[in-house]
Amino acid sequence: MSLERIRFEKATVNFNVNNQLLRVIDDISFSISDGEFISIVGPSGCGKTTLMNIIAGFVKPTLGKVTLDGIEINGPSQNRGVIFQEYGIFPWLTVEKNILFGLTLRNSKVPKDRHQQICSRYLQLMGLADFSNSYPRTLSGGMRQRLAIARAYATNPEFLLMDEPFGALDAQTRAKMQDLLLEVLQHERKTVLLITHSVDEAIYLSSKIIVVTARPAKIKEVIDVPFPYPRSESIHDDPQFISLKSRLRDLVMKEYEAQQKISNI
Amino acid sequence: MDAKIYNKVRRLVLLVSPWLILLALWQLIISASLVDRTLMPSPTEVVSKFYDLLMNGRLLGDIMMSTQRVFFGVVSGIALAVPVGFLIGWYKDVRTFLDPVINFFRALPPIALIPLVVVYFGIDEPAKIIILFYASFFAGVIVMYEGVAQISPIYIKVAHTLGATDWEIFSRVIVPLTTPHILTAFRVALGVAWATLVASELVAAQKGLGALIQSAGSFFQLDVIYVGIIAIGCVALTMDLVLRSLTKRLIQWQDRVEAQ
Image (cartoon, rainbow over all chains, first blue to last red; front, side, top):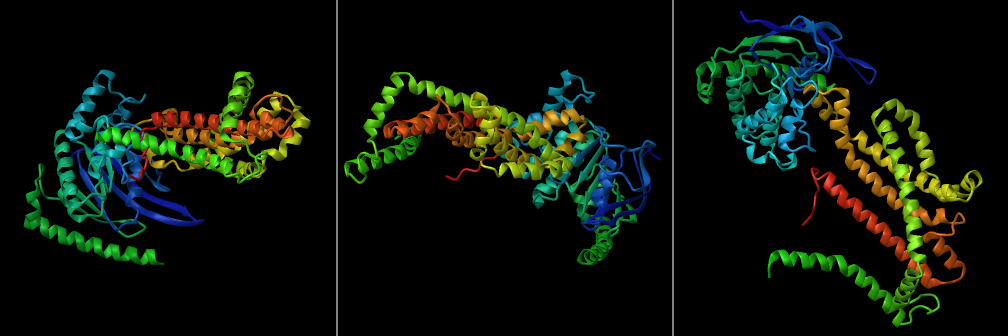
């Protein structure tokens, strides 16, 4: 049994939208253990991103609590790297300076003489070495994505929180990025939370999948993914993969339809 | 021909030709006697007047005086517009508090305030600079405020997750993101300030390009008026070019859409 790190205890989140109370997350309890790769799957607009924002420290639960190592999460920290859906690459900094940003902050624990070495390592790993002095506007979508990962990795956070990180990429780039992520994680084990609505992506990458319901998000089912790491593309053809995928898709589709009904009102 | 040289020549032709066309049109109007000669000096007359005024030192003094006034007016106006525009753009309460007031004063033409400025500040140097300051501040504050309001919160969120403190977020995220807007505010304010200059120098100025034009008007020295107008245009254009090259250097990261 591995060490429990993050724990949701009966967490509920209400938002105030146009003076109306909107319940986004409803009484969610689960925990994330050290080294797990957890995917959260559910219909869009159901509150998945809010779940991530709670761990990142941007949102506090209205009721219940969310703890990290037993201490309630109170604001963002360098220990929890976040990769946002829209990446948030700093356009005024070169690729290299983007990666160095976190390292050169006052809160950074990395000694100065190691910055350049870490930076080159991730430039190399993410295939960005030829672009180290370019401004982000010259980068393609896949390269921006890799830069976002490199920047989040550079400060060596224990947790990696990713919100639909591959959503904007074409199918080929997406597959490549998934493999790259698995490969990098193989070198540096981290605890990962991935928000996605791709069932395929969730199974391929994660050790555990949490299916959430339509808004307000509740946990519908927790599924352990039986494939050991390292994984390769070939597991897509595994009968177990295929049956898990169709089961998961049914679950998600039902919630998707429920969410549609809510959104239409 | 070498493509590089071709492009350079092409650029030069595009840069110079509108001026030549304007000059040619002007000369044509004179040569064809389309306008009464007493009402419009010829380009050569204006050039020789320009030379005269330059040689007797009057013109340089006027240019210096006006440039100095515009400079102080714009610098002080922007110096205040940057923090105020920032606060309005950033804090919703400050916006609610200040926005209507700012829009009220912004709508007033600076020229309309001249009589009041004379009453309160007299007719000396401060009066002129105050009018330019007024014009620059309100032109700049809007640019700043719109710019700051457009800053995407994602960059601040990212900086937070990378461990930035509030000060680091300000100095390393917000400042670089607002720099382009500060420079735009400067350019807009410069334009407005030159436009207001003549009005401000109506306030009993002895020197300055506005004063030069003003006094020439009372003596019907049309050639001098033309010299004054052209000088204002040249100085304003030069200042804008300097600011633009500065902008290019400071914010080369920005996407600039250029049609071929």
